[in-house]
Image (spheres, rainbow, N blue to C red):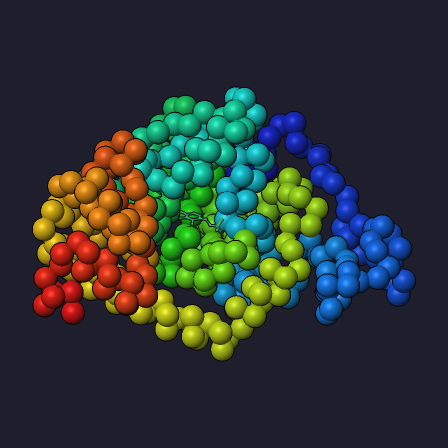
Length: 361
Ligand SMILES: *Cc1c(COP(=O)(O)O)cnc(C)c1O
């Protein structure tokens, strides 16, 4: 039995989900089965919005599968990876009983979705050392087993820590939790790092799940397109928990255009620029008075500790620059997370914080 079959909520076995007007393959010329309007909205001049969209638009599914190097049967398109997180919790955690395991500080949505579902959140804090933050994978695995967590959320590159996890270490955790928990690797920032994607481990581990998104490196945050990549059995289960038409037509069109080869080539140049800027900004920040630590980052952001984070935040804000305030989080009460912007924007950040000119060049 696959891990997804074993871990699917008991009460959802045999659950078919909503049967939409588009879920059965019918052929016809005159479509009168979904109570759609017979005319396009006057503002919809191209007439693209009148019909309900395909639940999983095939051309986009195939293009995304090719982009991520996986079989289309392994891929579910959703409203950002945020929806993927929510679906995973809903399908694989018993409401009010199940548990998920995380290593904070980490992206907040895993705990939010768990809490909304009444699932417990098992926390094993990250460790901080000379070379940055480290997810304690072994301890996390042991805690998941001890507490009966059916989902372990990893974030690589880590938000906000910037940590990149080695695929071999992820594989070892997946092996340890085989049949007992799904290991979810959120790769929202994968394009900015050097580590190979955890998708390379899917054939070896049926309990591995990878989340990808077009929101960050592909600059389509408003389109809300993300993917869950997993065992086809898990994908089928998630699809049955998902809304009937989760992919709006304009978003599907924008996403398809974004993953066309010519667009991808230009996107990759932008990502390269962001990576170069990340190293320049890291050097500049490290040389600023009052900066205590700049963590290495495999993402498009830097996590920075200040001697006086309040003043740094206020000075940036007074200059019209909004950065992410991390001060409310445990162990980050002196930290800000700064997204890598366009070169001129980064120059402004460095100037406001007093970076010496020769370092920031
Ligand atoms: C930004 C972010 C997301 C959200 O992605 P969407 O696809 O826009 O929902 C997911 N995970 C992490 C770690 C993020 O930082």
